[in-house]
Amino acid sequence: MLQSYEAIIENGQVKWLTDVPKISKARVIVTILSDTTPQPPRRVPAIAIAGKGKTLGDLVNPMIEEQDWECLK
Image 1 (tube, rainbow, N blue to C red):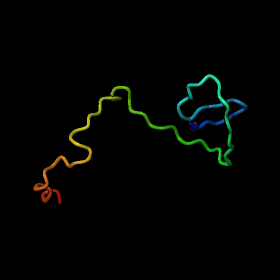
Image 2: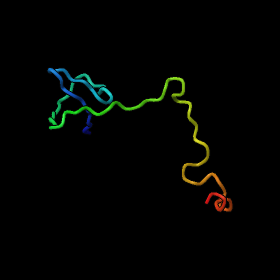
Image 3: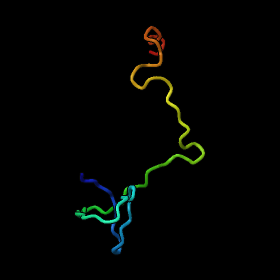
Image 4: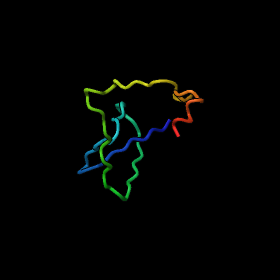
């Protein structure tokens, strides 16, 4: 299976912009993009709140009963 990883080559050194591939040896194909402007780094949650989020209710069905929808208009 082919996998893609984003990186920047600067002075012959590879700087990974995404997760570093966990491989020791591989055949690669490098495509040079004309725009070398790096993307801003992804935001990550503060360590104090990381992993503490909770999903309340069902992600598909509404949490509020259908007869109560009128009050939300």
